[in-house]
Length: 88
Image 1 (cartoon, rainbow, N blue to C red):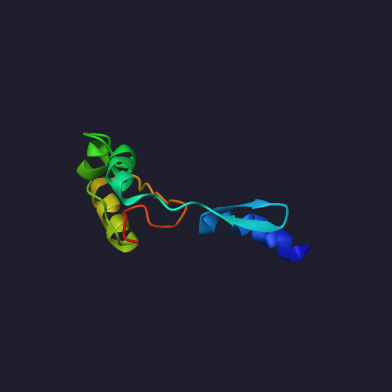
Image 2 (image 1 turned 90 degrees about the vertical axis):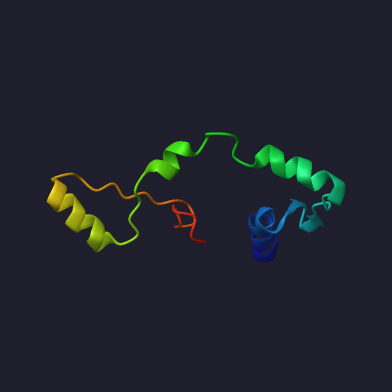
């Protein structure tokens, strides 16, 4: 039972789905459709323009020093995988 539960929880992460306790692999994406699908999910136009204009700092110490100099607060942004600046 525990193995079936682990499979059910991990299936989406490995590109499949679970029916009962059987892992069903997601179908491959045909090569000719990949460019079209990639264009659909890629950020369009200026969707992330605001993100690129922010002067991000990767060092907490540097951010603290700059915030103290400018008398401003620090905003810490964390994402689900811990890499808000895209450094995966």
